[in-house]
Image (cartoon, rainbow, N blue to C red; front, top):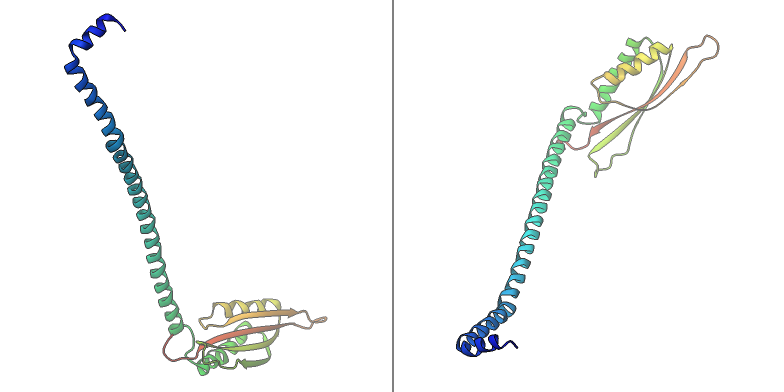
Length: 192
C-alpha cells in the first residue's frame, strides 16, 4: 500500500470507518428494503396497466352487449309490427286475402284460371303462425304469366311463391304455369 495513503487512513481513521460503515449500511438498506419495494412497485404498476386494459376490454364488451340488447328489442318490435300489420289475424283472414286477390290478379294479367287447391297445415298450439298452401294452375302466353307473377310479387297481400314450373304447350297451345304459394296467419290473438 502507498505510504501516503496508509498515513491518510491512519490519521483520518475516526472519519473513514464511520463513512465506510454508513456506505455499507446504505448498500445493505438498498438491497434489503429499497430494491424489493421498487420491484413490488413496478409489479403494481404492471398490474394497474393490466387492470386498465381489462377494464377497457370489459367496457367494449359491455357496449357491444348493450347494442345487441337494443338491436334485439328493435327486431322484436319490428317483428310484432309485421305480425300486426302484414299477417292475417286468423285462417279466415288468410283465405280472404287469397280468394279475392289471386283471381283478380289472374284476370288483370289476362291468363286462364285452370284450377286451384288449398291445403291448411295442422295447427300446433305451440307455434305462433299457421300456414296455408295454395297450388294454382294457369294457362296463357309468356307475357301474361310473367305479368301475373310480377303483380303477385308487388301485391300488398303477404303471399309467398314457394315453387313454380312452366310447361310449353304443343303447337299453338298456351303455356301452363303451375305455381305453389303459401301465406301465414297468426294463431294467437295477442299480436305476438
